[in-house]
Image (cartoon, rainbow, N blue to C red):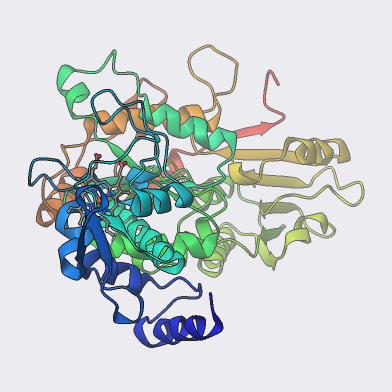
Length: 466
Ligand code: HEC
């Protein structure tokens, strides 16, 4: 791009958009889309009818044919397809008679379709779709705009949605969890349940600040009924720190730690706080010393530490709270350690009286084995009973989560048709009877703190049969 044009483009960027760090100008993309007005106010030219008939400006605005939100337009004799980026960037079955399945568009394929009218499958687009004289930066701006229409559709479509959050580069275990929820067995469920299993809109997030942006957009859209079983392992602090997130109910989160005191969490397995309190319900030890070691990353750790300290002091412990990752290694001088942090290996042999208590999120078998070998007695807390019936094998968290998630989906009232009915729907969900999975998991919508503590399962380390 010539230097002068570049300077002009940058000036436009600075004066017309509030927040953008890229050189792509989303406002430019929106103007081309809505009004056919390109960079520096020029009228975009499009040639319809196979390239012969030039039209410009508003006459060739994408919105005219593809709809104001890009979701497609049905007027006229040929349908203009959905061109929101999520639609373009996924493969489609053959759209035209005789056509092949269409591969996904990328930026280059998109540019070719706009300039030369060749679709991603290599076939010429219908002449009703104009051929445009768009510059590189205008194409980039359009792509950015179509992406933002995708995000708006994900969060801001008219129909209320159940949204599942997943990390972009999710661990394989997380992908399996998601597949489990998307293919819930329906064999045992009633016919009604099968019909009404709601669709889950999956939204992927990258780093913590990306999760932040997405949560804010989702809460702002006003059409997210609830976050269903979001995968927040490792992202609890980012979630808890986002104010907008607290306006969205969270159903059955896959989180290893609590989501902060303000979150509206329904059907949650007992969190870190409940597990820690259950571990503290061991017999009274008047005058003995307890160290509570807390990972600095834990959301709401000050409040949690205060609650735990109060509870322990009431039971007669002398309590010391330590914040920091290596807090556990310093076992000298205490009788028990409640480890709300990954227990590093012990630094030296420990007193045989030492007790180490560890909630599920921090269970690292090798480290716990080392503590056992060094002489400590180790006890762990789990959010659900890890075995069922006479089977000695442990049930992994993913299986428990999918089982509860599928049961919950089958039980949810049908999603409302319009955003103004979301509040009533949420009240119905909060009033649902507890989820019962045989005599294995029993999960009320909103467990009070004491009930949550009672549902924690305590086990000695190593567990039997390991
Ligand atoms: C006059 C109506 C009209 C206007 C204006 C128009 N399009 Fe289209 N567009 C169509 C039609 C009709 C098709 C479908 C052609 C076909 O199926 O062969 C289409 C197809 C497309 C496709 C291919 C989609 C696919 O699934 O293969 C893309 C991409 C696209 N348009 C983008 C745009 C953009 C971006 C703009 C604005 C810059 C725009 N269109 C303006 C009518 C229009």
